[in-house]
Image (cartoon, rainbow, N blue to C red):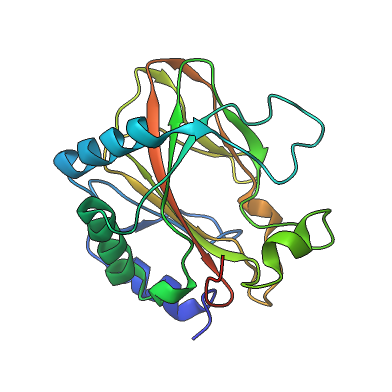
Length: 211
């Protein structure tokens, strides 16, 4: 099974409550209330306890390209195991292909400027991040809270913007049908204007995750 196959998209699209976003450029889906408020609150607590400044493989020379905080979530925690099981059931992707679950926190004024989740072939850090497990294929992102103002995720090349909403899932295929990377997945974690935004993200690779 390849993690970028049409069978995965078909499975996701067939799940109750899932909506495919109307675009021919990217396989992109959303589902509201994918996780409960109680589970989201538990994950927020974990993120607050373990957050650190976010890093980036290539900041394009911009020191404020990504200003959020990140938390590496322990696979042993019951809340993390629940999310992992939900995602595996939704997609059918072998969990062995998944990176560890990660949380992000955006305070007022913080953002992640327009970027892609895949590593650019030929980029300065491509071999460092992709030599063992290959490139990223699917992204699954879940908003954990409502945000008073700002904090939307904007796909500029699709002219689509998604507002934070507690429990809402966004997922997309970072690859083209031929296996190449899909530039149309460029997205911007827009600046939080008021409040704090929490999300969790799960990425899958071409091969089994080896760190």
